Length: 157
Image (cartoon, rainbow, N blue to C red; front, side, top):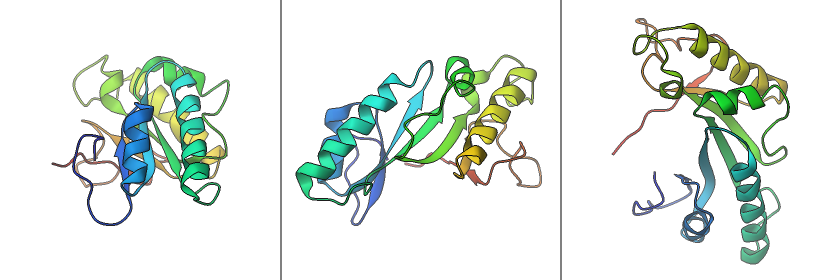
């Protein structure tokens, strides 16, 4: 759900890059934040600090709040080769294939293949699940379009 949606009952994950909205969502029951990264990991690093502070202030156990990082642009994918995003708090790593639309919509072109491979390798190196999102995520038989991915992220209302 997005940070502006009404929270459901129970624990949930919110999609936001705004630390204030993330904090409000945590107070309402969120136990995870999904952030899209297009260029560098600095926003994710700041969100990890926000989550750590929220845990302390709300009396939650260390590590109770998780961060899901979605690679949404070529710069973010290239940075995976140099360092991992927010180690220790990262719960899942994914890719939005729309951020790599260099060829035909949904096509498995070279930028998408390279970026998806980097995300799958980084997730595997950290023992994390990896997800795909966007057009071209599925094969006609329903399997993920790229090897190394175990989950699909589907946007809902």
